[in-house]
Length: 69
Image 1 (cartoon, rainbow, N blue to C red):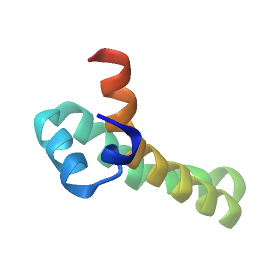
Image 2 (image 1 turned 90 degrees about the horizontal axis):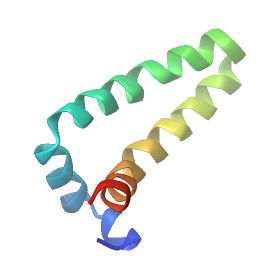
Image 3 (image 1 turned 180 degrees about the horizontal axis):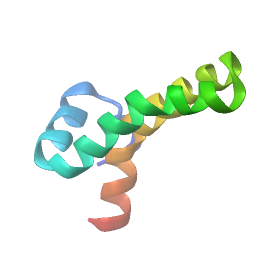
Image 4 (image 1 turned 90 degrees about the vertical axis):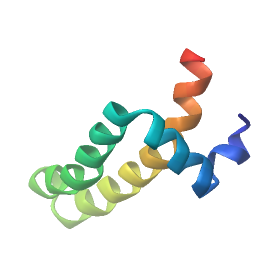
């Protein structure tokens, strides 16, 4: 899988369907990280946490397959 392929929604959806534990961890990261950012840095922390969680959601399939495939 190339980096560009990993950014496609159907490839990402298929990856998360095949890797249920990773999908659960990503759900927790996406929903809880903004609250952590809020408690640490306020609204700036929320903005940074949303960006980090979005990047993590999009890049996890690519990184996972490059490291463990």
